[in-house]
Structures are given as C-alpha cells and as structure tokens.
Length: 273
Image (tube, rainbow, N blue to C red):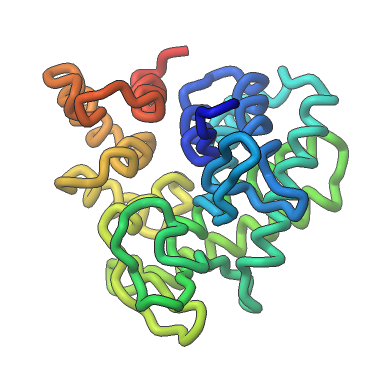
C-alpha cells in the first residue's frame, strides 16, 4: 500500500456494495489481514506504521447480507476456511480485550466508535454502546453461517449463542423508547447520539422496537453521512430520501468530493451488482 494509508473500517463498509459472496469475503479478509500478531485490526495502516486502536468491527455486516441471500454456497471452501480463521481471530481480540463479565462489549476510548468527535461518556470511561452490540451480533451471525458450512457444528452453536447474547445486550440498552450508552466502569447510562441509537437497525427485525426505529430514522435530520447510509440499508424511506438528494446534488452525500465508501452505500441502496 506504500504511502497510501489503508483504513480497515472503510474497506469493510465498501464490501456492502457487493452482491457476490466470494469478492465480499475476500475484501473483508483483506481488511483482516492487516491485523497485528495480537489480533487487533488497527484504525489505519500505512507502510510499517499503524494506529493500534480498534475501529468499529463492521466486518460481519457485508457477510451477513450476502450469506442471507444464499451466497455462501458459491464460496470456495479453502477461502471460506481462511476467512473464518481471520474473522475468528479478530473477534477473539474483542472478546479478550473489550468484553465485560456480563458478555457485553465496550469501546475503550470515546473516539474508538469512529462516528463522531464528541465523547458519549466522560473521558477515561469505556462505553457499552448499541452499535457495538449490533456489530458483534452480526460478526457472530457471519461466523455461525461459516462454521456450519465448514461442518463445525459445535463452534456454530457457540457463535449462535454469542449472537443471541448481543441481542440481549441491545435490549438492555433500550429504555423508555431510547437507546442508552453505558459506562463500562461505573454502569452509569446516558442517552446515545441519534445516529448511534439508530444503527441497531442493521440487525434487521431482530432489533428492539425495529418498527419504531425505522419510523424515527425516516424523520431523522442531519445524521452523519456514513451513519445515514448504513441506517438506510434497513430503512427504505430513508434510502429513497438519500438517493433523491444524491441525484439532485451529487456533492451532498460526498462532501463535494468522491467518497468510495459512500458510493458503495449508494450502490447497495440501489441494489446494483
């Protein structure tokens, strides 16, 4: 990659545009190959340098989308096994370094969530957030599908249990019609930023109050661009609004410049191959 930094989080989102499971898995696997020997997938990599902080683990999102359509059957078994091993190692890092006794996961630093510059909790307190529970549920779901295809039934059962646990965590963060972020240190809870509170829609109808979340997403204004693009994958009305805005003002969704990640989101929304 020379002098051009690689951003694993961006590559994971770009895979959303793909309809074929093989290239989607390869793009995610290419992202995971950037992980350190210890298993962390860094925020960015440039030559021999990297930022050893953990960006949101979006890897399972694209995989669950293509696997749900039956695409896993088209993946070469050796490539599937390699992807399974890489994703398992990356998820294991989160289990060992970013999980609590109750099975929930947390961002250690405010900016690890990757979504905005404002901390959701006081400095120094890790945050259990609904978007992270959703990402880990999707990762576990992707690993369950891969393990089943590889004949690893016991491991598939373990991943299924983890996916269910993350949905339980999501439900525990939903109170009085709002999603909360919870301090990993004290257990104190504060309301989530609007976008983070809508990202659980990416687990589909398994999200708590999915219908209410979609209704809220339809009316949401000024969502961060890439959050809006992801949320729109599960909210047709928001997708229609984004596509109309993009057609009328191409720079609206891209900040006036070409953004590969947002282009991938738009491709997925328009259901192109």
